[in-house]
Length: 470
Ligand SMILES: Cc1ncc(COP(=O)(O)O)c(C=O)c1O
Image 1 (cartoon, rainbow, N blue to C red):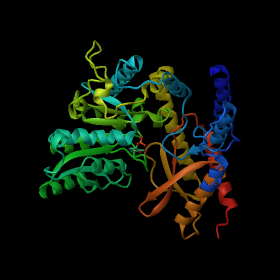
Image 2: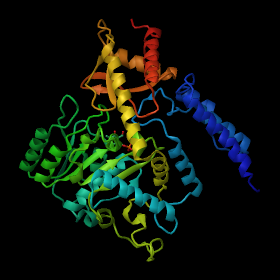
Image 3: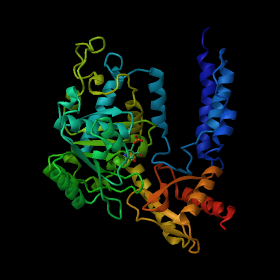
Image 4: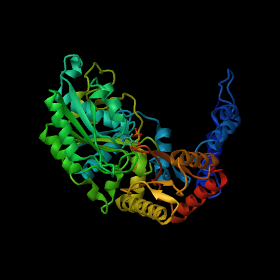
């Protein structure tokens, strides 16, 4: 049967526009929260033998949207991303329409050149003069590739013979680093225990002298330290490790130096805040997630190397003559430097967005985020019932409600945040600083205004009034 594209896309168009407009509507909830059991009943998820028509399908999609978190809503502060921008969203739509895969230039000519252009630009921004890179499926996987690159540099036999005859390698991150490094050590046969967590200071920054102590102790145990990762924007506190201090130690001990900028990487686009990246130009590799602070639809993640040919050399060369062929498009088959075979054309959505806003537009957007975070922090400081849990480093403010006469602040603050989240008024996450529960506010959406922050606090205190604190 011939598809009436116009009619189908028109129906989709209305649902999309309504969802986008809802994000701008102050009265619309961030989420219509339902428990898993209730939601399962509402969603009617079972697949039937007979299938359904488009009208029915759109009813289901409508329902799906109704019960999804609208992460563009200006009360969404729950994760390290929010506020998908429209040019990026369009890129996502058009990469789905053209539906190609990134392994060869043959099937993805425009997408390949787009990706190569962006990798070149991003390497240039990082100061990697002889750089290379690839779009990957998230910051965790970029961190895995970083450790993989390091392992194969220091133990190239691992590629063919595995790790059974390897010496004991050790890797170093701060105790605030992302958990993906543990997974990477596990997957690469190094073992999660070989990941040594270096102490951080009160701001959540790795302490370089502690790093050197740990590396030295590892050497004394006849292990081989091979990998150090600093973080540009830690997950809980938004802290930046001192890249140049850590890089010096890594180089002195012959380690691969990686910078995990999954969260904070995009801050490099602001000349006002670029000093946070001092020393980046000599690290070996860098994870940068534009889906976080550049507001590109998930997933848009880039692994950059300050070297050429590392990925191609490290990947296992198998018989692939059914896909990679000799032709005039030399070095354009990006599948040869990817651990994936099929891969989405994620570069397009970053390109549409960056092309639209330009470097200056992005610089302004990043600066706006800092202004908003500063405003939020000030509001916490000014309010006697709120306690700032750690001095703000970048775009994260950790705080809790502390009226002064309550013993179990962890239970109370967890309760407040649960009620707030379930009310759908505002969404904000939490974590722990030591044993203290802290509410973690993160601003990632540059469209958020000071008035939205005021609304957040109104919702926060409304929730406190609604719950019975005794
Ligand atoms: C510092 C840091 N590294 C890595 C990651 C993982 O990134 P992804 O979620 O894209 O895998 C995160 C995620 O928030 C992060 O904060």
